[in-house]
Image (cartoon, rainbow, N blue to C red; front, side, top):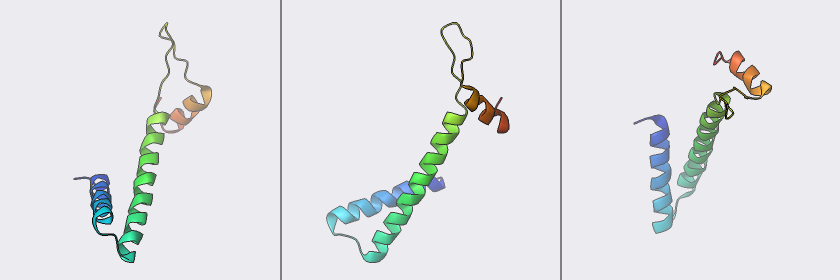
Length: 78
């Protein structure tokens, strides 16, 4: 199980507990920290996907914006 999976699992556990009986202050702080971590991981993964995106028109021509191409070259994706 990856770290992201463990974070998601723990967030879900805390959510269920919150719905059933509420959370202690320590658990609420843990939930907030895990949520921040989850969002940061999500954003990093999403940015990586966008950075590697190539846009092709109907004729098969690469029409990826120059700014995206520059980022891809810096990251040696092109």
